[in-house]
Image (cartoon, rainbow, N blue to C red; front, side):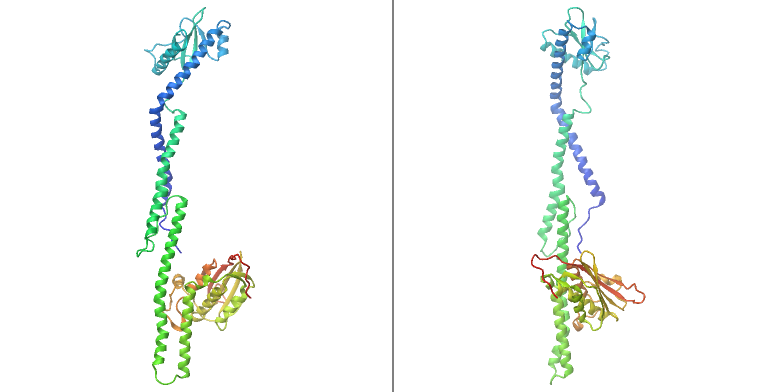
Length: 451
């Protein structure tokens, strides 16, 4: 029935998440840069103060412990290296140093220790020591002793985990408004503009399906509504034209007979009654097509009896009905079956056969067989359209081109379809029209039962 609107190209559907990922990565990188500029110096100062506290505590503890433990025992106790000598082991000079940052950290640590301790110990970078760190001279009464204090390198890359996590959070928050604007607000604005044009002279085009899943579902429902409105408008215009055309023939014939002088003969009376019957049939077809059957309540009926009663629309028909009970709209379904039988009699060839079969999930299938060539597959969809007659005749004997359209509408109202196919039986060639459906849900009242 309805087209869901312009589908989003696959490349665009795949590229959108990648685009938002790239935007989030860009915002994260920008946030990291800003945080580095704003907070990196403060974090470095905090790290420097923490290092000074730790080293000053180790120096005080080592100076007290040297009175009772020798350097190897003290090294094992502190978990670091304590060396004895006039100069720190393997110490270089600043001129030959490849790590200028280590010398700057050593100078800063020396200034901090001088402020924290009563004495101002010497601090010497140890580029080739047990690790990256400094040698701090201990205040020993016997001989010169040095304590090794590890110093972590200044963090360049990867950045500090705290800054990285904060930058990622900022990147996600910055991407969220972009996502909401492009995936929610913009599709909703397009949908709002299309809704404003509904009901005007120019019907809006279907809206492209894009955005979040909820917005795409809403857009799909809107496009389905547009298609239904367009279909209803076309049917209304065609129906108004069809009424004038179909009623013109019988009315003209009646007017001519009334204008003739003299009494009516039996033949004239029979033809007038036929024209009146045609007018009645056309009116019933129009009323049924415009939805009179939708007001009918679904009731539980023996379906084989209902179909057998509808078979009275034609004179001779072979019945093959499987007993079953289904909840259906009986008047609408009976008229649909009668329309199929009348079409088979008018356009097909005998013998006619009516088949009722049970389907799973309380379904049913009604097949009308005839011995004719049937409708070509290429013409089937057009034949089901309202007011379409493949033979070009209109208005004769109450035919208005609504038989298949009404049958399909009744099938859809019962959750089924109306299809056709040639007979596959060798001994029974011909054409088959198949109407399927299923039991309708109850209306919450006590189930009515028709016999």
